[in-house]
Image 1: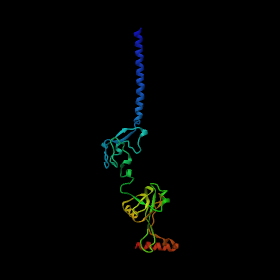
Image 2 (image 1 turned 60 degrees about the vertical axis):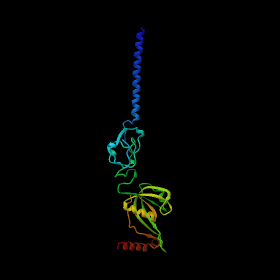
Image 3 (image 1 turned 180 degrees about the horizontal axis):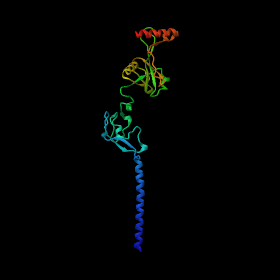
Image 4 (image 1 turned 135 degrees about the vertical axis):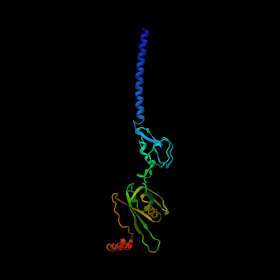
Amino acid sequence: MKQNNLAKLLGIALVVAIIATGVFYGLFVNKLSSSTGSGKMVVVAAKAIPSGTVLAEKDVQSIPWPVEQSPAGAFEASEQVAGRTVLQPLAQGEPILAARLASTEKGGGSGVPAGMRAVSVHVSDSSGVLSQLAPGQKVDVQVLITRKVANAEPELRTILEAIQVLSVSPQPEPSSQGSNLPAVTLLTNPADADVLALADSGARVRLALRNPLDGATRPRTAVTLDTILRPSGAASSSTASTVASKAQ
């Protein structure tokens, strides 16, 4: 009788152990699946990668990643990063992020497309415009020149139109002209980048904010106090003769 009871107890213990093992295994697998992101994959560096490297598929690998911890700008497949250039060094196992790569289409983390240039200019007398500026908006660039000759009037000229803003630094910083002025970084082509650099070093730069959908341009004639204080007819005649003389 005792042996039968012992056998029954061992049988019950075995069943309980099997059930407990199954419950534990089920909970463990669910937890593991949750911790690996339920199938979410993230591309990481397969080895240490120096800056300037053009990525190949062998340089990276895709690993499971928790969905709620997936970093912004991450990629899911190695094909998405192949051919892209690394802007900053990557450690082995580090996620590959869009901000760390350059591309001819989007400019990567720099925000500068191929063939374009980012130029910072120090602006004066534009505090109202600066308070409204944000990346992506467009501005006209004006320069104010005061010639160092007797009786010379200040001269204002619009040198560039519909230029895209990349960033705004409203806090004054030292400029090449010896004064502290806010800086704005603009996106332009290489030739106009030279124009902006020269204006920044030798003239007072002002910005005029425009509607981003407005692509209209106009003749870039110089304006002086004398021209704007004349009667409207005389000013128009003077402007027309100036344009005609420059055309000749």
